Image (cartoon, rainbow, N blue to C red; front, side, top):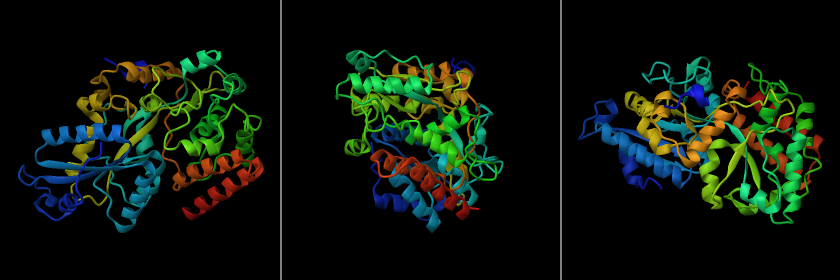
Length: 428
């Protein structure tokens, strides 16, 4: 039995448009009186790739089999298209009944009264860590239920490091040691590989760095908790590495899309969330990848936390509240669902699902990583400010301009702070 104490803790649906319209049309099921002949229809949507879609469709089919008076109909898209579609639906008042959700957008939709308060919805929350549930709360109301957790890590390819003669990292390193590792990897590969992408362009690694330095990202009042000098210091960290073999140029990253440089075997390492392991192995075709903790100049404070890799939410306007919340409870608590997803969406957040899931191979590796950092974890972040999704995108875009050499660090900082101040003002 695996406990949280021990390790702390996408095939298309093929649903025709006409069938979906029929499912959304008025029927006896809308009144909540579903039968096996006329089941209550719950529309569910998520983002992801074909692997996630295949797993999700299996979970939906299992739920429908166990609940013959309810019929869940699923659709999915990629990340960018997903949020564009939700914005359009929200403007028209027609969000799907149940949705896979991201922490970045929770406060935005919840404060506009577009998500259902799940606090008293009958969903079993007994198996969730009390430090994790606040990540799904806005104004003390539980709008999102975490499906799973993930933690930030530095991935590396041990075979590539052996090939070029660079020692594997231990995960106990300062930023200077991390940067030396990237420099050695890029230099010794003689043009075959780069060290990594520029980690200063990743918002969540910046968030971790802020935590390491005891600086907050946003205040409870929805203001910025850090100064321009803090962001300038962060973006200046890699000033000497940009344009060298340590960091892959932004234009080369664009050429590799939709794969990442690491998944395309163009870098020997990559910092990101631990549940990307299966996707990286699938994209790269390598036999093995490993993970270690992010660097920190304070060995006692790694700034790490368990973040909900995704949440389940429901539309505030759903006409099928009971059926929708029953489906959410199934997706977050069922051990059978855990067996379907393993760690592909993160380590299961609920104890019931986690303990009913067997972890082997890559999945066991993700669990082991979270176990290895357990003593360094702090509380999960609360939902970020309204408009955070825009700020996160701007953070990456502006930093890419920095990598292209189109702006200086000071200009980049001014641009991002202007965007942030505009977003905060608009949503005040």
